[in-house]
Image (cartoon, rainbow, N blue to C red; front, side, top):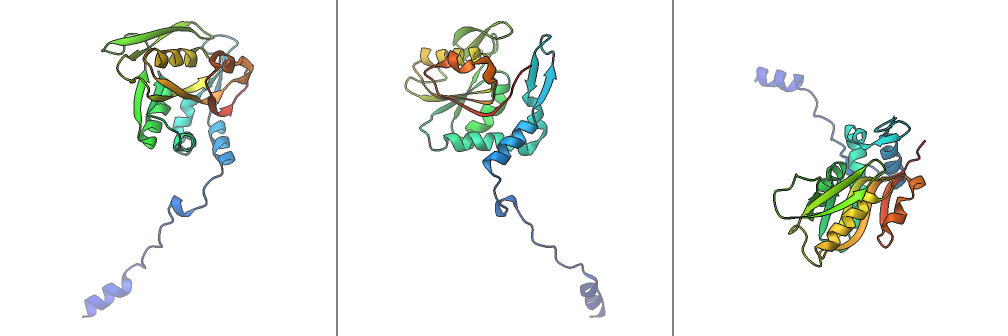
Length: 206
C-alpha cells in the first residue's frame, strides 16, 4: 500500500490537451499567398546571363508554404467539374500530383521526350530559352474528360499552350490552366487565349 501511495504521489501530472491546427484560426488567403511568395528564391543569371530565375523548389523546404500551395489550388477546383489533373515535367509534377490526390482525381504526367513507354501524342513548343517537346500517353485522357493543367510558372506561355494542344488532340476539354507563379511582364496569357488562367502569386523580372 505504501508503494502504491508513493508512486501515485510522485506521478507526473497529466499532459495538457494538445491543440491541433484544426482548432486554431484558419490562415487568411492573403497570409497563405504571402507565405508562398516569401518562400520563392530568385536566382540571377540562370539559365542564361541576364535572366532572373524564380526557383519554386524552395517552397518545398517550407512545409507550410507547400501545403498552402496545394490548399489554395484545391479550394479553387473542389467544386468545379474536373476529371483529370495534368502536370508538366518537371516542377508541374510536384504540384499536380498532390493536388490530384487532394481532389481525388486522376493525374496525368506531361513528360519530356523519351520518358513515356506507351503510345504517345507529342507537341513542340518554344520557350524563352529553347525549342522543346512535350509528350503524353495517348490513352491517358479520354474524349470529353475535363482537365486542369498545372505548372509551376507561366512566363511566355509556350509550355501551357503545348499542353492545351495535347489535351485537345485526344479529345479532352481544358477547364483551366493553373500556375504557382506568373511573370506578367512576359504576357504569357496572350499565348493561351481562350483558356482561363489561375495563378497564386506574381513575380517581376530584371
